Each structure stands twice: as C-alpha cells, then as structure tokens.
Image 1: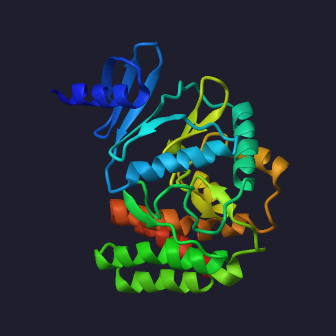
Image 2: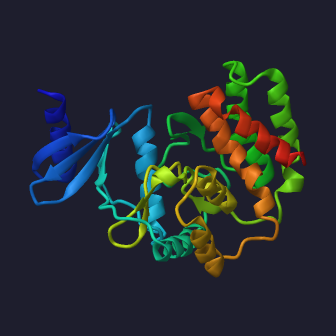
Length: 287
C-alpha cells in the first residue's frame, strides 16, 4: 500500500466517507477530496499525544462559539482529520470581525492559567516543541516558571544562547510580577497565534488552525499576532477593543508576552532568533 493509499484509508475510517484523491501538502499534512465533494485535511502526529492535544484544543476553541475553527472529524492518536478551510484574501472588515471574535474566545475563559483543554493531555506541544500545561492560580509566576524558563534552559543547554544571555532573560523574568499589569482572569488562548495559523476564509471570516490551546493571559495571543506580522493588525485590535478593552499599558507589555514564543523559536530554529529574544528581555528590564 502506498503512502497516499494509507492516508486515504485513515481518512475513510475517521470520516466514514470514501476518498476520491489525496494530495500531500507537507511531510505531515495531506489534503483529501471526499466522495461527497468536501475536502478535509489529515495530519500525522509528530510527537507523543501531539494530535490528541491539537484535537482537544480545536474542540475547546470551537465550544466558545466565537472564532471560526475547522471541525474535527476524528483523531485516533496518530492522525487528526479536520475540515479544510476555503481561503480568500484578508480585508479590514474581516480583520475587525476577527478581533471581536478573538475577544469573545478569550472571554470564554479557562479554569486556571496553564489549564489544558478538556480531555487534552498536559504534555502538549507548541509547534514541534513540547509544552507542559500545569495549572496555576496566578499568572506572573506561572508565565515565568512554565512558559519562559523551560525554553530558556533548553536554549542554554543546547548552546544556542550563552549563559550570560540566559542571565539577561532571567533578570527579565524576575520583573514579571511588577510588569504584568492589572490581574486578569485566565483567558481561553489559541496559544500559537502567529499569522501562519490564521487563515482568511472565503466566507469573510478569519479561521484559526494548529492551536496550542491553554488557559493564559489574553495579551499573549495578541502579542504573538504582532510578532511576525498580521494583515490589518490595527483593525484586528480595533475590533478586539470594541468588545474587551485592554488594560492601560498593554503596548509596553508586548515584549514580555513575546518572550515565550521567541524562546520557542530559539529552541526550534536556532541562533537566528537570539537577537530578538534578547531585545525583548532588555525591553522588559527597561533597556
């Protein structure tokens, strides 16, 4: 049986539909055309429980009834099958709608900071990097201890950051309690909301894919949107603020919230992200 035939068999088993043809999108993702005319995406797990965590995250985000999320057809622990999103082009109207819907998603809440989606494993992933969900009652200590420092240790241990550079990030972490801003309840986060995980649908709405969903601070999702550029970001933020205004000083806290995804990129992709990581750490330290 060829690789395409194996994927087709998985899709047929998880959807209950015949498969007309398949097309490889990447090493782990395959598009399948179903016999009833619909298209789905099949994703192979690239780590223990990775697709189980993603499926639980997609369902949790969908349960909020706000941001558009592809429907999960099935997940067997090795494969995840979801609807394919028909894409269009972004525009300001869709961006404002996305901002409003994202505010609604965050407002749906989570049981705790670091809480995993219901039914999802605590040992999850952000991209290809392991990410542990360990619930906590307060954000500053959880963010420093569970989201920043684990990846900093990995980066220093693998030699991507020097020990001296690691100490710079540690000094930024020590200031998290005073930099965090007003206390907020845990938000229901996408968790890996960079531009590549936002699809601008043909239906005029933004759709989100590939979550690393957990309970966290809502400004983290927004800071990640800014990290690598998002079309019409000002319109997204305008829509967000119409529904759930951000606390004063949120712009100054962007580098703090970007430390986590930047360190993930250092661990996964190397020294190319060291400069931006250290710049964010220095901004947290006031220069």
